[in-house]
Every structure is written in structure tokens, then in C-alpha cells.
Length: 620
Image 1 (cartoon, rainbow, N blue to C red):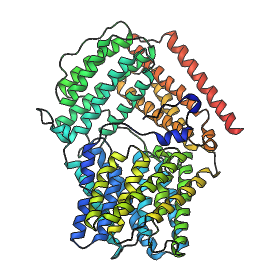
Image 2: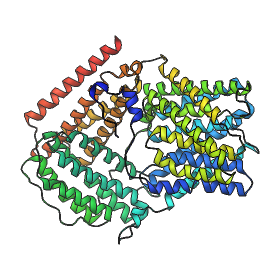
Image 3: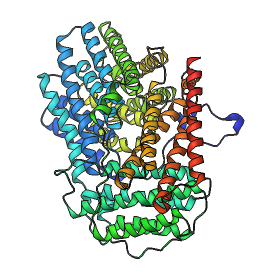
Image 4: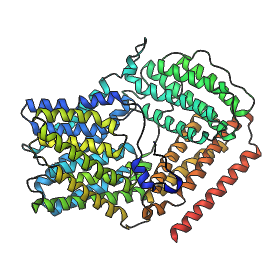
């Protein structure tokens, strides 16, 4: 992320600063190619068959699948793209039949109920959030964009569009897998890149030990481990890894866990380490990317427990790289009870209620405007509720920021499309515009306003191909209305305490940290369980910190409900780091030093104090 440098006295408000931030990184050329080959060819095939209406539905599904086409392994994309697509098809079916057979009032109640359910489900995690979003978008399109022909035909078309993008994701090799002399199995290039990034992150943390960069480097290591864990957790035909390449990647991921543990312990100690300490992890990263053996590794110093742990971890990694076998530790185990707790808990209820209100209110207003002929020649009312669905999503950033980005992106996209529509031939020019828009979706995902601009142009081109007249002005008005609805609902006082999602995230992080600490202090020799608990502790902590950062960047009326949460998260982070240092020291000496025990006691006291202070502030 970056932000233009400003003097401290002229610092931007957090919500505005967030709106101006964007992500950096290389262009995802593979995703660009997939996007260009998705919606455009589907539309061409539908036009050739004389069913432009079904082509529009398939292209919309491909566009939504392209939004979920993120970096990672191929098998992970099956869940990331496929599960939301199934939910979108279900929403399309429900919305279509509800729109045909229910009156406006009952239809609004049904859509509100779907919003409540989808909002609660979205609290589980990123895939669940995308699933809830596509469920609501599908139902809005089904109810508000009636198509000619039997209603059931749109569902297979939707599934075909998403399935086509998923097929491209699974079948097309990436340039990295074809580069060099070695032709690697391209099916696992996402997993290889994710595991190699873990070793690079370990090396970067070792370079930063004893400096101010150690804390962000440790956070980057957590992010790399999370990504690798997800990449290796995709669906398999068999319970265990079934190929030599797959088994080798699992072993190399498992070998990275003790390296990360030792590096974290060194960062906690705060003493600089020899420069050669980072050379071993970097050579391992190169071996993962090239699909080769580890080769000779430089031996680090063994002058204290953490350095000895690093040396032992390097030896273990070299052995695992050569043998290609290791413990399968990638799976993140979440019980049905925990998932239900996320949906029905305070965070799920809060988001579900706001999503239901926004979706239901926008659907009711859209229908009222439609039946009152406020839209003129515009016959479809899906845009307003579909826009509200994306605006109400808290994982897209602070409320004011995403409203500002959505409004700006829609205005720019609608104006761009009006210019294109005036000069492009139909339908050939519009089909080319759809193909270009599909290619740009993955690049535009770096910023919500840019993504909104691309999606607006793409959707307006699609619906015009389907026979709808140019409606840029109407889309701008509907988007601004949706922004107003979401802003109002977002600031409404609702039953229960405000900021329930943040507290639920902190509670989950606290529980995971305490479970990890309890296992370490029990001096259990089960390292596999310890590493699993450590992963869950850092993962839930990272999710909590992200939620806290988003809440702190809200407008002051909302940001005040997160006061003190960042301090609790910081203490939990220090507690987990200290627990890791204790684990490494116990492995080496069998006992803790007074520095470890005193630090644990102080952190526990500080955590209790901060929690009590937050409760007092909230009650006041």
C-alpha cells in the first residue's frame, strides 16, 4: 500500500487516506489472459446461437468469477470460485421465481431474509463472504432483470459462465511453470510459489532481527504462512497427497514451520544475527521455485537456543527436501460448531442485520421507482440492490471509503461507457469492450474505485448487448442512492453492542493465543500440534488486527466503537511472540528463564487491564 507523503499537520482523515490507497505488485498476466478469454468468447458464442440474453447471464457469471480469481493454487480456486458461483446460481433461481410469482411487498421480505442469511454467513471468512455476495447479487439479477424464455434456462447459463472461467484457471499453465530448462508440473505452480514465499519471508525476518523492521517482517511471515496454508488446502481426489510432487510440497511447507518459529524467537530476543543466517532459507526458497533439492546450506551460529533451533530447523529442512516426505500440517481444522458460532455470533448477527436492511430497503425503493416510471425507458431494477450488496461488505474497507470509491468509480465508468457506446459498432464493438473489461478486472482489483469503474463499463456493455438501451445516467443516480442507503443503515443504532465483529475477532484471537500458550507451558513433545496451534493463533490475530484497522479508519461516529481494540491486539501479538520464544527455549533447555516467565505474567496482566478498560469505556 502507499499514500502520498503529507506534513503531519495536513494528514488526511483515516477514511479518506484509505480511499486514496492502492496496492502495488506485478501485473497478474495469467489472470488478465483468463479474463480476456472468459466473458467475450461466451458472448460471441451466445450471439452466434441467437441467445444474447443467456450470453449476458453467462458473461455476468464469468465476471463475478473473475473478481474471485485471486492468486493461489489451482485447487484452492475450485473453492474460491466454485462455491460462490453455486450460491449465485441458487440466488438467481430463487430471485427469478420470486420475481415472477410474488408481489412487491412479499418479494421485498424474501430478499430481506436472504440478506440476513447471506450477511451472517459472510462473517465466516473470505470465501463465505464471496458466497454471500453472489447469493444476493444473483437474487437481485433474477428478480430485477427478467429474461425472455423459460426462467430455468438462466441458471445453467450462469453456471456455464462461472464454470468456463474456472476451467481456464485449472487448465491454462502460467508463464513461470514454462520458464527455464525444467518443465515443472504446472498444476502445482501456485503451491510452489506460496511455499517459496514462506522461506523468503523467513529470510527477510532474519535480516530484520534487532531492527525496527522486525515487527512488520514478522507480520509478513504470518501472511505468507496463511497463503501457503490455504494454497495447500485445496480439494483432493484422495485424502492424502497422491503424487510425488504434491507430497514434496507438503513436506517443504512443514519444514518451514520450525524455521519460522526459530526466526520469530530470534526477533523476540532482539539481538542481531549473522548475515549468513538468512542465506539458508533463501536457498531453500530458490529450490522450491525450481523444483530441485536443497543442496549445501550455510550453517548458522549455535550460540543461543534460538540460533540452535534455527540450525536444527535448517538441517531438518534439508532432509525433508531430499526425502520429499513429511508431516501433512497444512489443514486448518474448524469444527462445525465454530463455523456456526461465527454465523450466529455477535459479529454475524450485526453484519447480517445491516446487510438485510440495506438489501431489502434498496430492493423496495428500486421497485417503487420502477413501478412509478422514474426510470423512463429503463425496465430493470436490479442495479440498486446489487450495488448495495457490494457497498455493505465491511471486508472491502471502511464504510465512508468504499462509498466514496463506489460513487467515483460508477460515475467514471458510466461516463466512459457513454463515450464508447456513441462510437463503437454494435454488437461487435460492445463484445470487444466486454473482452477488454474482463481482462482488466484482475488488474483493477488493486483499488475498489478502479474495480468499480471496470465492472460498470463491463456490465453496461453486457446489458446493451442484451437489448437494453444506454442507461449511464440512470446507473449513476441509482449508485448514489445506494450509497445514501448504506451510509444511513451503517450509522443506525441496532440491537446489541456496536463493533460486535471486532470483539468477536479479538475473542477468537485471545482463545487461540491461550490455547497455544497452554500447550507450550504443558511442555508437551507434540510439535505437530504446537505448530498447528501456533498457526491458528497468528492467523486469527492477523484477521482481528485487519478488522480493527478497518474500524479505526471509519468516520469518527463509528471509529469510536473500536477504541482500545488495537491495544488489545498488540498485547495479544506480543503474547503469541513470547509464547513462541518460550517454546524454542523449552526445546533447548527444558526450562524457562525468569525473563520469559516475567514477560508472560506482565503481558497477561496488561491484557486483563486493557480488556477491563475497554469494557468500562463501552459501558460509559
